[in-house]
Image (cartoon, rainbow, N blue to C red; front, side, top):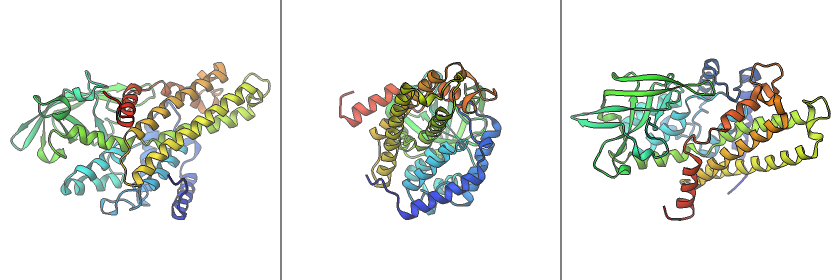
Length: 389
């Protein structure tokens, strides 16, 4: 792995940082555990400006509306957007749907879907989890039955983030009920304005409004099928690896860590000496710095593998799992060092770091996004170490 950027990549990063300094003031930056409608809309505004500069999909091929660079440039973008706490939006389309269509879509689907994603014109949500299906995703129950030149969908999806902002859903449905569970699943894109689709609000602890999405005799044309019928499970697992490089997520947490270091050097919540004067605090902060650097390298390893033509699999799970647990370790340490002040949320005049410590601790306890820690350990053991199921 080459840890150095090329002169062109360094120039891009410098231009990007100049743009972020001008366009993303502190008062507009995302606060952990607090996702408001205003923040979401600001994130979309930034994406539109990035798209105007051909940066939003800088790593995509030019024929698909991208910048023609590669995963390293896309990683630079993700890391800096995370560090500047740009509120996240359109991530499903950019990180999952776009790559899936590039790999498995027809030319007509590429022409229809990729341009609007690259121009930041559309929002996607993901339809994987269901009311009775979480970690064992291959047991999904949403049915898609062939009827002439259409598929008829019945069932529901759960925990649909961005559903109330989304134009389309990228989903998995069961198309062969007699096949083994991994082999009877297909991948679709559904326009959420299609008759028969409805949403039930499902509030998240971070302020986001997700949904349970219901399908009642929803008819989708055959052109909505992505890839081969009954091969959706394998298509989805391939494209999920691109989501899990995690540079945005790492940098978002790293920014809070760096701010916390400065806070400890200058502040004394109890009125005594600054926190950094305590030997135990310095020791704990050094440990977490080691963890942050390890997390960063694991994420960049995934991006480097992608840039070299390799498909990260267990490596993506290593980065994601380590990051989930490192985020929690940092959050628990910060809560312990700050004591009662750490429980104050954004808006309180005494809340340290705008309430980011309370918010990151609340979010860090969510250890099952994009797969539980147990699932990632299974992937690492089976696909990374060759161990039996």
